[in-house]
Image 1 (cartoon, rainbow, N blue to C red):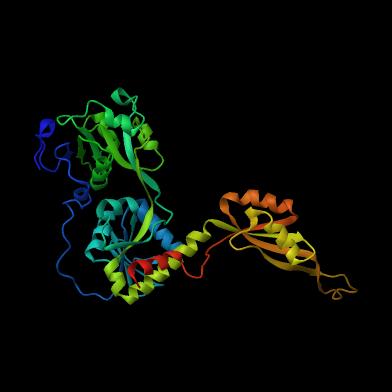
Image 2 (image 1 turned 60 degrees about the vertical axis):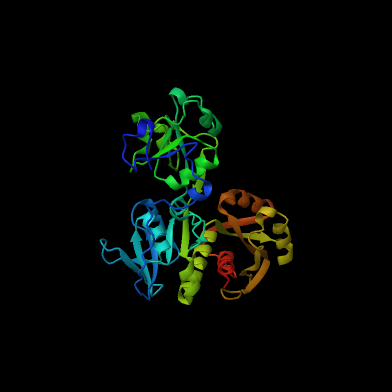
Length: 389
């Protein structure tokens, strides 16, 4: 690729220009970056099932915590090692890798499973038929990929993507300079939105400083709370939110289809993840309620839609010691009270407690839930269908 205009002094690889005449087709843009080399032609035979996870940062911490919450304890005898084990899953190796390498080694077949951010998956291997997303919402690492625009100067009045595209400054010799670590995602985005003159620049970090320094016009990066953008006089604009991201579980499709042992591991992983992630959204609530029968109590609870739980309440009689002569003269007897157990969304806890009181509930107890196992995870059924198993 040759460079023209003000960027001609930079070596190949500094930036990649998207211009009106040179803009590649969407089909071409969907291909992976040339930096992703073809997979190795030689495979080393192995029997162990390999799970790759991020090696550093918050994603690494959250991944290990999620596995631990699912009763899968990753044991690494030496912190300098890149390989670990899971005692609850003999035969499974855990490999610590850079996030981008998690995806690449899945593509190469060097590992069978990987946990990585959806943003990195999209950047490195989106639309690769050799990979299959097993779980697309692991509920950690939540953020989004978006544009960061200066709040002052010529960008002061730019509030949406159409305004940015219509700025007369962007020409073939003076393209919009975008610094990002997501070149593949950026190419697709700007092409689909009809931008004619864009140059993508690379940086290893501190992207937010680039516009103020003058090395770029805008940035395209991950945004979590938006605080870093605001502290560097940058803003998000309408239409500039490119994609949402969180942790995902991905597999090499060929390995999964050909290896029954891997299928067993994946089935267990999905079950454990689903059971924990579903339970984490609910509390178990128990309340004492006076009633003439279990059906009477259940009818009152079911009349309130917010108290119906997953499938409905569990009602059981409350026994107390009846009066009688002497210390041991009493016996257990029903007194017209019933214990009602329901699952309540965490976000609606206090409202649900008030609703229970409103229909006669008292002595309300709240407990966290650890797991909710369904008959068969819907995501596992989807995997079987996708692979034709």
